[in-house]
Length: 442
Image (tube, rainbow, N blue to C red; front, side):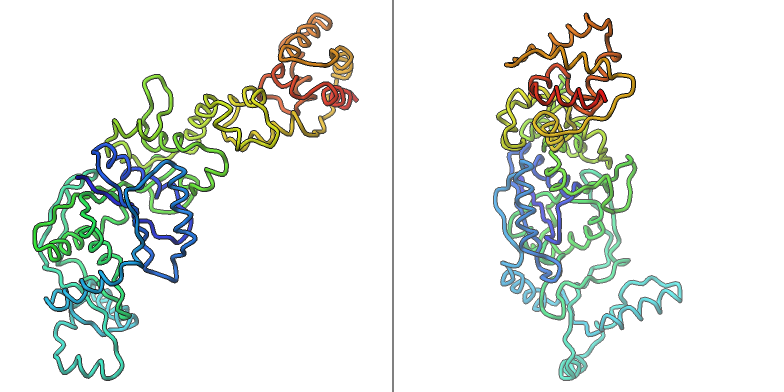
């Protein structure tokens, strides 16, 4: 059984880079008939907030990602404590009494002598008496994992062959001075407990992999069976860039509020499209998914908007009715849906057909606009009135194309591009059309 997990830290919004990791895990599990865990890494109460965790879950559900089970690490402290006691008993971790300032001073001392700034393991030489005296003096230790120093090799499912020499790595702190587990320890305990088979995450976490492999083996008592896959950092330029929340890494909630459809975001992330150019839903994506589909670092906002325009153009009225302005009709949606990059742009077009706009004065077009107003047919208007009115104006004025339509567009809708004027006119109605033509003609 394939088991994967997505493990966000609830410190704020869920960004596109995080969604890509969640999507990779979800599609990988679906493709292999496996399961995905949602784990909320909320062990740091000063940074994590429950409201952020709830928002992350809401955003994932909106995106279409479902999980088999979920939990918060803050609910599992007893399990972590049992593991800590076991590591102490078996002497895999050792107490250290240096303060943060002392550790920084040690690192600076080694740097000045052009030595590696890794931890010097001085506390391994601590005698029982020295430890007792330190604790009697009010010092509380943190606990480090004693690494073996060996060289580990593994095959990353995206990055390929990898290796790390543990002798070149500081013994990591697994238990803080307040007794709480570090994220590395809690994560490994959770992965063992859940039965995780694959860890798919961002490349900025790759530095922990060798330590985690050794910790897995210590806690399991066997060779680490988990496979790792690391997604390169996300950028909007097509090049791998260091982290940073810029244009190429927007918040998912912001995209949702702007009216970007989930399938447009997913298609842009994976580069997967149907043979006919349509945009597949997540379940369809899963059928042909490979981790390499998400290995590219690029997320192009312009490309996403182009895909979203195609998606919106194919959506029927019932699927968007509850997100359109109050009073919007199916005829309105059919008129505008092929001209939107974002669903929120529908608000502007609703103002055009149902609100009050002040058209600009159009130099040299006064006579045309007054004649156009005079030739407006009496109501009621049906869907054919716009085309018939424009045809009559062509015959009466001898004008065609932009020479006729551009002054009419600017007067009636205030825009030189967008939905067909003939489709919008019956929605605007005669009173608004008459008023706007006369105002623009002066």
